[in-house]
Length: 457
Image 1 (tube, rainbow, N blue to C red):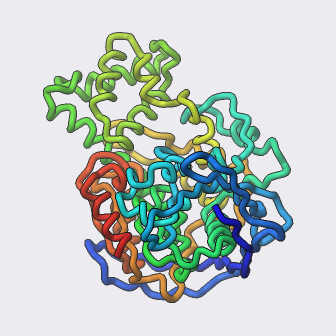
Image 2 (image 1 turned 90 degrees about the horizontal axis):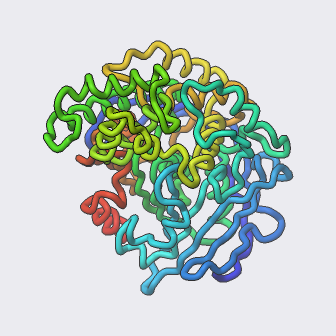
């Protein structure tokens, strides 16, 4: 990787709330403008912003940034960056932004054609691990368990995540991550870049485009949350999508004779949950195990593996269910710490309290899965964020630009309804893909081929 020179400062603008729009299949609606709010500055460090080391086929880098960009002397925080040079003819720079789960930034840089198609060969690839992820400066959480169970006392996690007072626990949000990206591309003199983001990475990428449209020439977003929608509303929409996904998973079992719980699936799954709740399980299974195993099935689309584990649990062997829940897998604690950092940095205290109240009042169709109100409860005990989401809208040039938004039509992690409305409000192209699971780019072959062609223009 050649040596790059730090150049001009990049401005970071926090924008006021955008108006919500109705749903749309497509691509031409333009949202009303909203006024611009306060401005902060993403200042590159005085020395080199990125240091590089050779990692074989790729370069491994560290971007050095302040913990809070509006205070250049704060921190510092290190952001992991991985680079892979283009094969000629080079057409530009491609920034890849991962989700909390799934391929890491290093995975994306190592095998970019797997994740975005053959077009990746013609780009200089920069895969960025957002602040708070395990290979960037993580939130210093000395958690006793690799996953916070929904029924656990969240105050212990709050205390664990405040143990290092040298870092602001509220500075890991989307707005600061956008400033990191502006610092990166300014420092490396990339010029305008193409971007692909997944999940959390897609939300960061979308916000980057809304705030700094000239930095990005083309962009693909897979399942972004809307940074201009109240987090309370976003949580409610995601909760509804999660509930619908539970119904879809159970319907799959009753429609497939190969499902081990094909007959009376609802009753049999309910009995497994009842045994766990009553403390009659083994292998360390708890209701967190049950809820997170279902969430993993919803996210991966691997319904068969879930029901195989539940069938074993029905016969008093819960080990497979514990394994499938992925609570103790390598990196699980780091992913949880990253979620705590990101969630709490994007919520105000009022947002967290209202999400907790709404979660308590939600009436599920069958049963609850996932983390429920655990993360907002952790956030209550954390320093309040100065940059909560819900107040981002498009500056001139961001709407109607070369952006494609994807979501799984049955996504139970990020609400397809929210994603569709977001795309309409930004006048970005939208497509719902018929696929089980969360995230489609790099998983669905047809979608990935489309993305590859799109990136080449």
